[in-house]
Length: 94
Image (cartoon, rainbow, N blue to C red; front, side, top):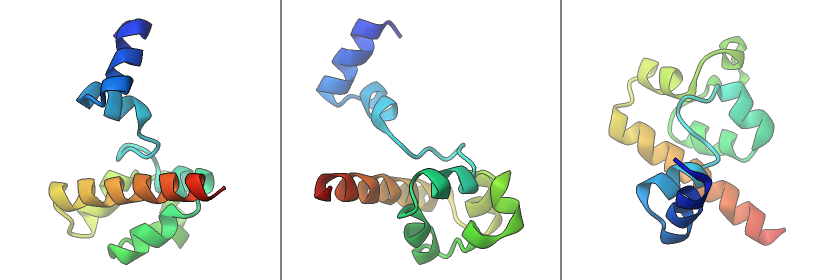
């Protein structure tokens, strides 16, 4: 996607824009997500994903951890959305 088209997608809030503005994606490792955005650990634990303190968090993706612990794709996406909301909420408070 060209830079101009990407900027327009972000402004319009389209699917492409949403992906571009997302901070947490399911392909991110659990460790990376928690390191960059510590508030996401609480969301993961709330959803039953207690991998945040596990030794595999450094290389296991959010998707792998969630699916490995019995979440379906819909639950996984809901958790990722909630993590991004938590990041935005904290950002607005600062």
